[in-house]
Image 1 (cartoon, one colour):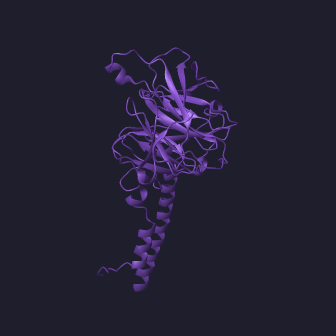
Image 2 (tube, helix red, strand yellow):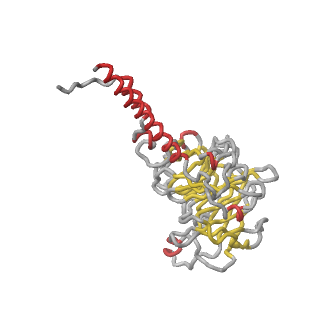
Image 3 (cartoon, one colour):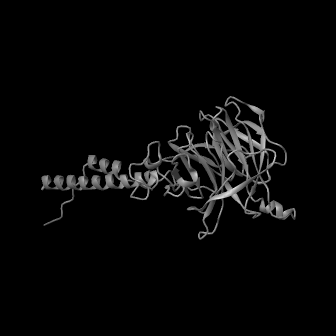
Amino acid sequence: MPMRLYRVPSAVLAALCAFWPTAATARVGATPGPIDAQVVETVTDPRITQASGLATSENGRVLYSHEDSGRTTDVFGLGAKGKVQFTVHLPTGSNQDWEDMNAVRLRNGKRFIFMGDIGDALLSRQKDHKSDRRDYQVYRFAEPSPDSTGQVTATGLETYRLRYADGVTGRNAETLLVQPGTGHVFVVNKTENAQQRAALWAAPASLNPQGVNLLRAVVPNVPITGASGGAFSPTGDRVVIRNDDTAYVWWINGGDLAKSLAEDPVEILLPRQKQGEGVTFTPDGHALLVNSEGAGQPIWRVPLPGSADSARPTTPAGQGADTTGGGQNVTMIALVIGGVAALIGFGLIVFHVRRRS
């Protein structure tokens, strides 16, 4: 009996194409990462080629960024389309190794920007034949109006000297955490060795601008290597720490960061970046913003999965809670839908063939 060939109905093909996950829907363009991550801005200003930290204004209209080790001491306020809307100039020479920043509202109702000069400045110190760094700084100034333009004077500027209590010099850190409300400052040092965990260091609850503020280790083993940035959520109910490709989000129990970091974090896959550095929450707390070093780099918005979003996960941490990224969840859902669609399509094809027979 000769083989009979039938044309598959176009409706069936359309259904399969609509539901089957393709490479385009499984990734944002050709960039690996969560499928629902989006580029919100691309920073094209030639002054910004080594962007490190990232923060956002309360209304989300301005994103703050800064340059890395030994470069300009301008803090950049980015407006629409990633263009520099204004700059805040801090004292010349203050950028030994700026690595991270936070913008938070304190209990007095005022918002401040905290700049972390917390890196080891290794290359510049070696070049100048200087000894390993012993003292570090955090600069605090009032957040400018989001309507500011041009050059803005830093108002209420305070400088706080930090020193590690264990006496170790040359320690590198790229993560500054400032707790909303209290203004409590924490630092997470950067470790490159997978066998060596990072540590959480706490400054005194009230910083002294006149003397040295000792950083004391309060969590010796934070489960992350290569920590390059961090931030509290706007309400202080969560904290995020990132490295090159993953963001780790913890829920804060009773305002106690140290105790909270003992729990398992929610891990969120980040888009591939040239050298991922900064991270902050969006003002509504539903997503993360991440940036990168390099010229012409995009700033990504990465939606949070339900287990790290504005409602606590219903499953206790460490007992089957969803600890995967939003993109991974969506990909799995897409695969399930695609499989069901394929079965339905196959059934329709068989039905159509039998009806023609």
